[in-house]
Length: 350
Image 1 (cartoon, rainbow, N blue to C red):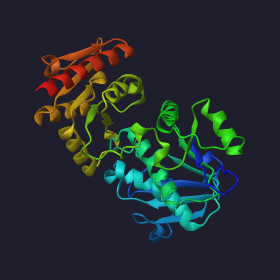
Image 2 (cartoon, rainbow, N blue to C red):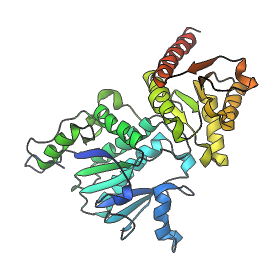
Image 3 (cartoon, rainbow, N blue to C red):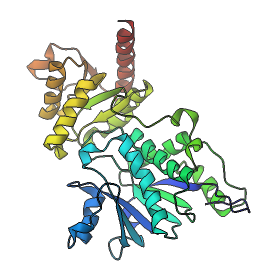
Image 4 (tube, one colour):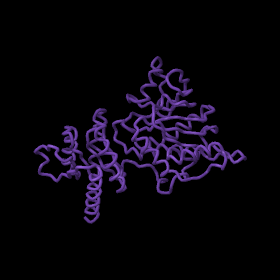
């Protein structure tokens, strides 16, 4: 938090760090309670098992001393709907509710820590839009004045190094406002960290660059569905080629985690394939779930782009279809960019 000498709050530092949220020293660690979900919220639920009535319902919250559960002094748990119901509007509400709950509780919070919610939950949200939605919600809390007046820093902690680096870069794209008073401690720290792209200053919605002030996406937003093996071995294809090529065309990029599938999430997957602009399918590894998604896309007349690494043995079913064969990741991005542009132009002229 910074101040101009007249008690005027001028925003707080927002940063992304790579690591384990449980090991980050802070005043409060924020988690969500989504029924039957995994992740950090599930770990924290163990501490309330003796009294399940203590688990927060949608919009409710609970705060308790962290003890040995985390390096933070307190745990804040906010209740949400089931994980398969979480979309971008719900993530925006969650971001706002985190700060609003701390304000209601009256805690003197300087440093709040949380994670990137909506990522790797099986529901296939676009990671960048999920992050922006959380930030918009926190900006809403600032604008309403319902946030701890002592708050100086919000830290998003992400275990995956590649994703953490990507989100660090996004902060500089999303947030443009230059509020800190020269010489203020928070301003000096923010300036130093901004040089490495790890933090920015956020106040209300006007903190965002103009193109990022738009409302969070909803289910009607144009998107591309990606069918691919959900394994680290294919992260380069996704993060270095598929996702940037899709985002360059102004579309959301969504993929599902079959390892987390329940009936509700299967329904979500089928719906997102039906409503997609098209499906991009990475055929590497011969994953049967990928072929299931491709077959469903063909059945509901959703266009597909099939891609495979050079030398990949393709089954008979797809040999008669056009497949983009790549040998290098950067060439895959170029091929996808060309193909997406061609298909969008084709659609626009029809």
